[in-house]
Image 1: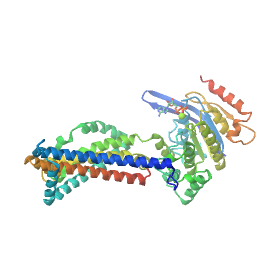
Image 2: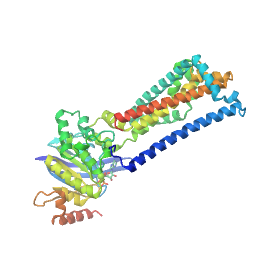
Image 3: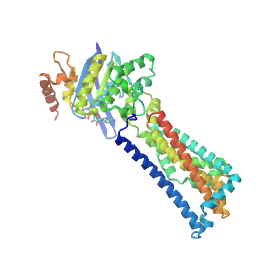
Image 4: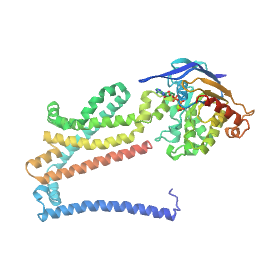
Length: 268
Length: 253
Ligand SMILES: Nc1ncnc2c1ncn2[C@@H]1O[C@H](COP(=O)(O)OP(=O)(O)OP(=O)(O)O)[C@@H](O)[C@H]1O
Ligand SMILES: [Mg+2]
């Protein structure tokens, strides 16, 4: 594979691949830069109303103002709430899915409830959640949990159920207990499902947190966005949205890194 | 010495749309070190019979004895190999081979050494740290066999264990497996659809009827000398055995 004497065709192939990867990156960055440039120019020439859509330069100055004015606190609050909702959703979701895989009876009982809960717009429960959990961090984390939990359960359960029955029979021929079947066959063969659902989960938790912050309105990026909207400071709203997308991308990358680590660890 | 005795075993599946009798009143016994081939029409209950012998399914009638001991639940004396190799893709070959021992909490240094010796003897030592997807079909099947043998079964059950392989690989692998089983002194029961395979590997061939399966005949196969499967295939006595089994099986059509 990586012998010292690489053939000419192989060198050319590697070169082509590298060039292609670089070109993809150049076009990606180009699109972003082009978008920002058009936005800025349109705002400056008055083609669009920069009071409403803001502009990259206004966002930059808002951002530096906000950094001086305790932005880190709001980012920290949102990040903490999202991570809390995400970990709870993933942990509880995994445990519930495991329990439902374990007991066919329980899973049949739960079936109609899962279906209804899954299609129910959980945000509609916002006011109830706030009354139950108090208008604070607890309610917001709860909201994130409500939004991400059922999806995780359904995804993981579907994955568990689809585990190759041949592998399970093989384990049983060695006398494997149900617990061994779960930890040595079902769980490891569902690593891809697990991380797939974690990736969806991180986005859903963020949705829940922002919805919660809209309602509770005390701190966090969701609060800043609502506040900006109320006082007609669209720069603030846009900056908040951009910070949110950076945060979402960062967390997604973190889950991907974890997945690569797990894949290496378990040889996936 | 008698290794396995099946006494009047029967199995009836209960399904929503009725009862299905897979086999009824089957009795036979197998001596230590013997190789018994099992042939029968498709769907007659061969796989079910192996599952019952392995203790994966409780018989609905009769009883099974391994080394004189009645089988209740999965028997540790029995190794079972399925049609697909079911190697776990996230484990290396060595870790796959140790899987059965791990499940049984029997990863003693002795057992591990034995497994390594099996890998060595049967030409997989160089692949021990590789993953199943890096091996050819024949090598994977050999790895699956070693995984089964590493748990030191007294009886090996093979359910069409070679039918996923291409013809040429299959001839080579059956030769390998036959040699491995004979040198490890393992008693084996092999279900197959392939009449030549049943004759080339078996010391006896058990012919089953259509469902519900019962034993039509247990045919001893004798070539005068212990021959490898490939040598048997070119022996003059091979053809007559084939015709005999073929005729028995055709009675069901
Ligand atoms: N879990 C089950 N529940 C109900 N009926 C079953 C079940 N498994 C198998 N059967 C039925 O029992 C009969 C025997 O099945 P089995 O798989 O043992 O046959 P087989 O001889 O191995 O077939 P093949 O040659 O196709 O492998 C079939 O008619 C099948 O439909
Ligand atoms: Mg079968």
